[in-house]
Image (cartoon, rainbow, N blue to C red; front, side, top):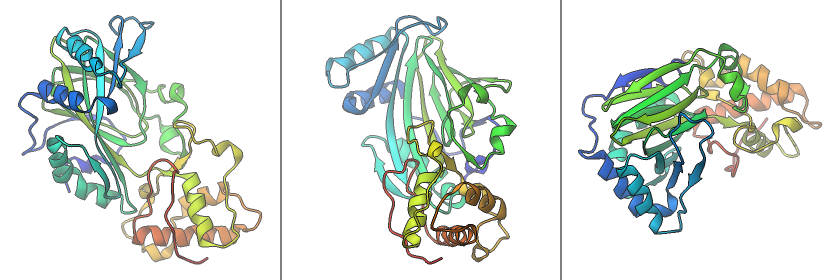
Length: 334
């Protein structure tokens, strides 16, 4: 397993150095601009009227359908004006996905540093997304949190990242969402000044904001990975295991927008010495069975269904991705 993936499922942000054998493109800024130029319709590019120190500065987005947008973006980069761009390089779920052309560097890092560790840490299947970021002019990427553990590999320029470690009350939750930004920012923030060749690990759920400063364009690539399991997907999979089950969640858990969607992280409950045939670990079983609802399925049967689901999940990838768009067929009995 890569030394980087040793940090998966840990809760403290920290700075690491590039592992041996990992280097970045010789000219990261040119590399990033070339990727933007050839993939304009899929790039996200934004600018501010003034530096980030002005909290009310207006944020505007470049028109991805206008070919001239890239030249305007490039000019702002060259003039060190407040601007920011991002582009997805890899999008993979349980080994199936896409890798963008001209993203060989990201592919090599993915294969050498993350594939094995991701599979070992997330045996039910996991998601990985690599994104290229380029910004300058004191552009501030506002505070937010991610569903996944993240590794930010920094290549050029200077980047200040303020991270609020996940407060204890959120670490202890079995079923969660990420809508409470204010509550997640009650911990004491830590400022990290990144230099080229450094990696910042940011745990899932940790609020953070990013500011590119200095005269040189800041270029980084993030690798986000994990297997946060949507409660709605779990319901669908359970209902495929028993005819007429009609398992559901309470109404407040049925929202499907990004921050109100409810998840659990099954791989955080895997016990090394526990036989999968023993069924779902007790704490996870208690929490899930206490929330799931069904007029047709009693509590005893619900727990048996969950333990059978766990056995299936531990024997083959069951993870379909972070959003409940589609669910594969299952076989099993209660």
